[in-house]
Amino acid sequence: MSGLKVPVVTQAKASSGEIELPESVFGGPVRKHLIYEVVKMQTANRRAGTSSVKTRGTVSGGGRKPWKQKGTGRARAGSSRSPLWSGGAVVHGPHPRNYSYRMPLSARRAALCSALALKLKEGKLIVVDTLEIEPKTKLAAGILSALGVDSALFVTDGENGNLERATRNLRNVKTLRVEGANVYDILRYRHLIVTVGTVDALQGRVSG
Image (cartoon, rainbow, N blue to C red; front, side, top):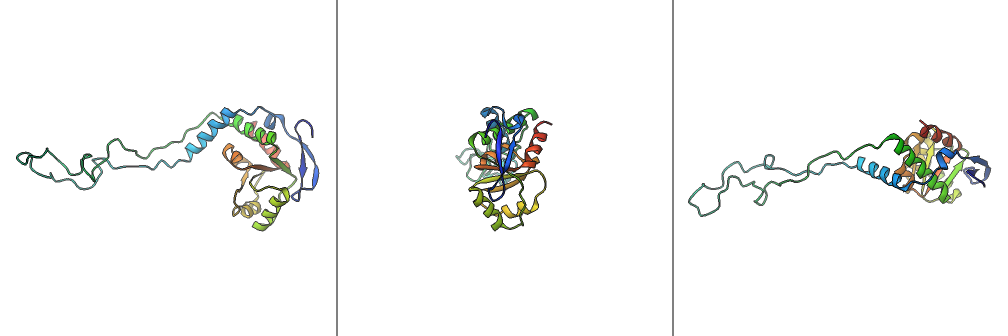
C-alpha cells in the first residue's frame, strides 16, 4: 500500500483490489482542536436543557401571611414560600434553556476530514466493495467477525435498510448514511467501515 491507496475487501475479508482515497478528504492534517470544538458543539446540541426550579412567583401555596406583622416577637414574614423557608422558592436557580449553537460550515467540514484522516492514519478504516445482506442481526455479526471488528460505524452511500435493521441490536455498532456521518460518531466507534461508493459520496459532501 502506498500513498492513499488502501485495499478493498469483501464482506468475508477476501481481497477485492484497492482504491485510492481522495487527498482532499483523507489526506489532510489531523486538526485536533477542530475535532474537539465540533464534538463539543454536537454534545451541546444534544443537551435537553430541561433543568428547572420554581421561583417565588410559581411555587404553590404561601398566599396567606403566616402571622401578624407585629407583636409576636418573631421576624416579619409575608409568605411561607419565601426562599428562606423550608419548602419555599429557589433564588437564581436553573431554568430551561437551549444550549445548541452552530459552527461555520467550513470548520465542520474540516473537522470531518480530520476525523476521517485520523481513522486512516490509525489503520482503523476498512473499505469493502459492497454491504448487501438480509436484515438479520446474525448476518451482521458474521460480517464483523470476518473483518475482525468488535466496534464499528458503518457509513453507506445511500439507503441500506437491511443493514440498518441488521445492526441496530448490536452493541458498539451503528449504521449511518453518508449525509449523517459526523465527527462524534466516527470517533466513538473503534473502526470505520465504508463502501467504495461511500468514498465518492464523502468527497462530494465535504466539497460542497
